[in-house]
Each structure stands twice: as C-alpha cells, then as structure tokens.
Image 1 (cartoon, rainbow, N blue to C red):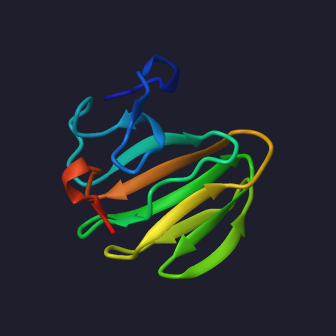
Image 2: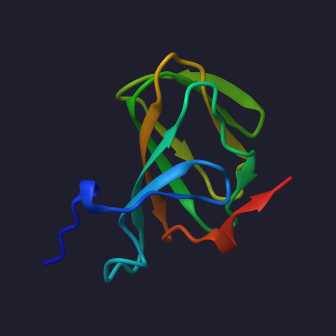
Length: 119
C-alpha cells in the first residue's frame, strides 16, 4: 500500500507556470499509468498555453473560478467541475476569480515536463 499526504508535498512550478503539489507520480510512488497532483493559480494567474502529445488530463476544480480554453473553445469553470483535456489538445486555464484557483490534475500516462509543448 502506498499513501501520500498532500500537506507533506513540496510545491514546485511546472513548465506551464502553475504551482503544483504532486500527490502521486513517478517521483514519489511506484506509479505506472497515471499521476495525480494539486495545482493552484493566484488571482489573475494563468498557465502558458500548451499541449501534451501523450497525456490525457482531467482537471477537477476544487476552489475558485476561472476560464478553460481547449483548442480555441472557452468555457467558465467553477468548483466541482471536471474538465477532460485530450492528448495533443492545446489548452490554458485562467483564474478569473477573486481567490486562488485550486484544482486536481490527473494525467495518464503520468505527467512529465518532457511531454509539455508550447506555442
């Protein structure tokens, strides 16, 4: 059994500019097919527009309000929304609220910086 506590994870900045606390990934668990992290963006913050050739992602919004853009389509996102990001889809998340935007990121295969591509 492998259990990780979110509060014990050290935050870092990913290649796209979001602050991440890895919950389970290749660096801290015997993960083979997926990864799970908590991400946050400050008020007015946004990730750099990017895509992943291999990874399918799911964002689950925990707190805050924002806007999600996937391949040119934009939609408001709110707590308890889940967003599917297919492999190779250009995407960006923007915090449009008055508090930090906090969300879970699940990636399959596991997230790696090398699978992140920018405009």
